[in-house]
Length: 196
Length: 196
DNA sequence: GCCGCCATGTCAGCGACAGACATCACTGTA
DNA sequence: TACAGTGATGTCTGTCGCTGACATGGCGGC
Image (cartoon, rainbow over all chains, first blue to last red; front, side):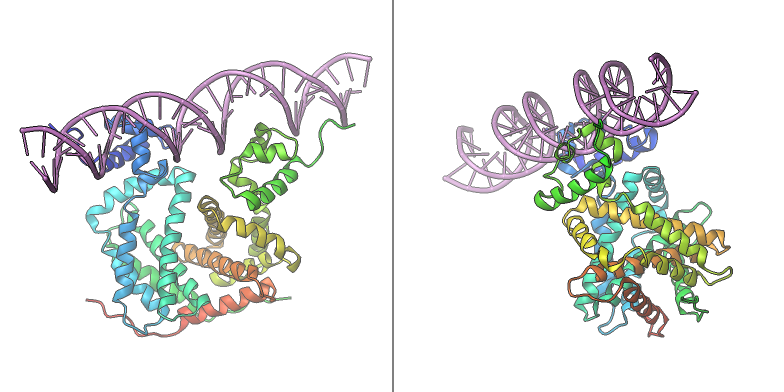
């Protein structure tokens, strides 16, 4: 007879998603979540720095996927190509089987501003990672930040589309389409707005 | 003899910035801020939805500047040109005289993750505004989101540079330079990364 | 000159978190 | 086999963010 059931962290994460979906984020206390899996509030906060974080653990795995993709880009590649390489690697992180879970999780996030805030922050961390990598590859700073931020924009737009009901394309396919759209958006010559 | 000194909101904002700068955000309680200007904690929270918000009030003014700029763009303008028009309007919001204040405020924000989170969220709100406007102009959705998000990226990068010590160019000048950088980043033909 | 408004104060309470200390199955070691 | 150490957990206590309910009292309108 073990003293504690194993996988406390994972049980808390699952329970949190279920309870948030049922009653909403604010109507669910950390103590509720902990009790529902036979733990105490204190233990919850030992596993997660704050209540929101229970939905964002595992983000570091995505960051690793990005990093792998960055390293896969050949030395001397153009900024945007380095980013594209990272995006390609990130796409592997979202196989079709993951779609229902991602969708459920996103539904919860979309219903709460505090969770959206945290999500934006996590995306910003990924951008910071990209920024750092690009600087390390000798790309100067305005370009490095722009490329990194643009990369997460593409990622986010693609993710939102991937989640959408009725969408059948793979994450990678969607991301490629979004990227093409971006290129045509900034690449096309356009009539400048008159400046006074 | 008036019952209350006028401008409670503004006094709270000033005091908050000073105290955050002196002791740090977390080491300053809402009650501290309120007491320092002769008010109570309860009054603080009547003026600001949460403790962080005391630094982000006035953001709606920036949003108005953006909206004005959006409306200034001619009908039928390309997505990115609409965004550029908004950026031009936003630049007016940051005259050189504002630089010291913006710098002080940003220093505080940069030292606290919770404040960075809120700042990202505010930027996202501006992007959402742009998105909405572009949709209203008949621009379809992947492009609308990309253009709006790209716009706030340019804005953010320009702002960070404008704040930097030793930087003398105006906000508008920096923004233009960043925008040029962006165009050359996505516009240039580059060797695609091999995909397996 | 009375009346209602509105910004504020007061009070009580919940929930998010954190520090300090206790517990006790498990593990390695003598 | 005994025994000390480890680490995940529980318990207790406290601070702070934030909110609802109600009271107060200048001030402007009528």
